[in-house]
Image 1 (cartoon, helix red, strand yellow):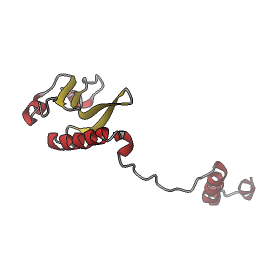
Image 2 (image 1 turned 90 degrees about the vertical axis):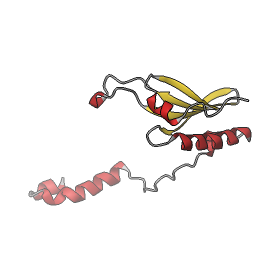
Image 3 (image 1 turned 60 degrees about the vertical axis):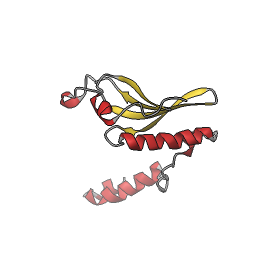
Length: 132
């Protein structure tokens, strides 16, 4: 049986070296290298939680959130949910809730242009320019 809960909160906070650190059973902490363009003189790169699993013979990585937004205990809960889906032969990527797309009327270029002209037409002082 693979080891679980290898990391503790203090270890996770102390980790600074870029790399991928296993907590066990598919849960990993990824620390990215510091970007040269990073503002503010940050000493380390970003930390984020990953769930790594294989489905249909392929390796997949599923982000569980930033280290600063998702504590270790919550990351373990999320990883347990993902493991349960994998055991049921369901893809965790497809089981994630999808945000509904905002409903908008499709705006065509002609409709936009007509609306814009109606808005700016009063700014033309010459009647000939209005007609054009």
